[in-house]
Image (tube, rainbow, N blue to C red; front, top):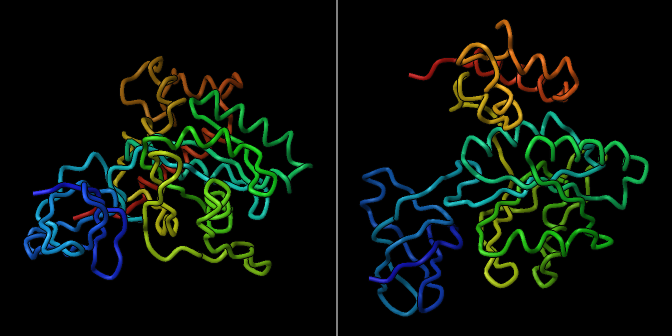
Length: 293
């Protein structure tokens, strides 16, 4: 039986890109019985009933999956944050980064709307330098002026990428700049709410460049750390994880333990204070989480 990749899921149908093109499939009842829900990005085995319709018979093993947005086998997450409107937030960025790191997805930080942020440029450059020092790649872009668009394109080749971020930051505008024929709907920022309305209603993989696939998603509807344990948070901060190798105690949580290399780095100014403060906030949030049964 042929194999393919689910490109879109909508109203109970799965659109699979196979060797003979796109075919609309339904899932066999066995998936409901085994509580397996096919996701966009899944590699599947399918049976064609005719040229246009078929059934998914098997879902191949996934390397990762996200619940919100529902997508599997993601190679990288383009974390889109605007310089202004809405204002750039390191707290929100770190929350996204922790979730992406926990799911073993490579993040790329993309700061948009540079054309609107002339007065903020120096501050944003400082943040970019600090996140690069932490091990992340950071790009500056503007959909209006096309700044950074050519630089972003090579990152998408040969990968499944998720564009994620706060609503209103310009995800759809960025995709339109990468592929103008898409003409994705863009809503203006609500001045009253200070954020945009979601303009994307389902998850779909869009071809970008020669062989890149990008998911324009409705965004993460949950940014809670429901799966992460206190001892795992350390590994979701690459800069803190590296420093922790020099902590005196194995399993150091970097809060009250003596001879902690992470706290020493904050005091010395080699680890940005806000990164450490966010780590402590997230750690307490995880500790305060109700136990799962």
